[in-house]
Image 1: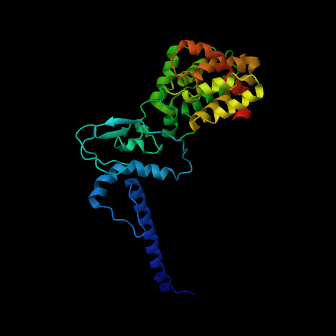
Image 2 (image 1 turned 90 degrees about the vertical axis):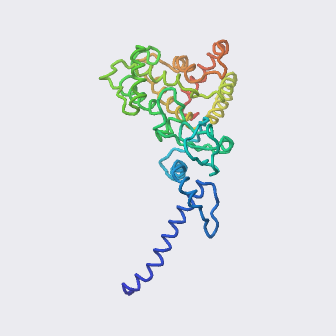
Image 3 (image 1 turned 45 degrees about the vertical axis):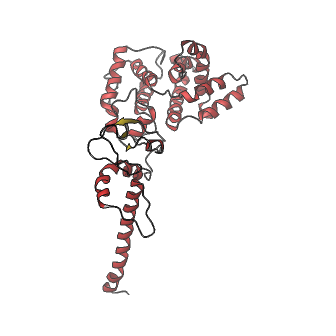
Length: 332
């Protein structure tokens, strides 16, 4: 048996090793944030640099920590950089060099607050982690930005509205086809923008389920980048034009994989919901074709703002949504 004195004597070196490792880890994290390398024997970080840079790299440290969080949905997102004038001394959070000048010294991401040189912004990875304090509204907000800010798989508007519709509206006649009062739909929009996840859209406040469906459709229409993105629009239209049914379905599946993860997940969840709507067709009179007519122009818009193109592509938009609903268990 080891004596207590012997155990304490052996424990001291172990504690020193653990403390050294913890210090090393903090040093490496700071070095990564500042863009410097730490050698085998460590690296000396100039104290004044640490003094000024540490408060400015908090966002980088936070993002580095989030990458190790299993509960975080790592959807890739580009930074939304805009030219910015900084007050007082400022260092670039990418290269750790000073930002010179009196005005417009660099750029700042309006979603996460990352501050870098304009030249450095071209090299920053797509690791934007939006800050909820910077997200002013829910509607008209980029889909990926919203889900990353709330650390969710899908926009909470979609989750809350679909949950409410499935709870009390699946058998409502003309679901999604019949419009609710515009004023009430705008009220729901304002409630989400103001209260976020705490918005109350229950039957006590909005007894007409068509108000909720209208608010959901409005959310999709207001997206700056549609659920079916501009980059994939022409590919989906080309897939819809294929005459062979099996080849068409395969082409649609291939294009689906090109969607950004947040867009893909939102579309998948919506199609599962719309499939449930078609199951109740005897009551609501809404089949996949009818829903395709409603959601085609809502979920996909041509990159160019052309009325002629929109009218020409309407039947293909309808067909794409119809295929997604009918084959959601195969395509997703």
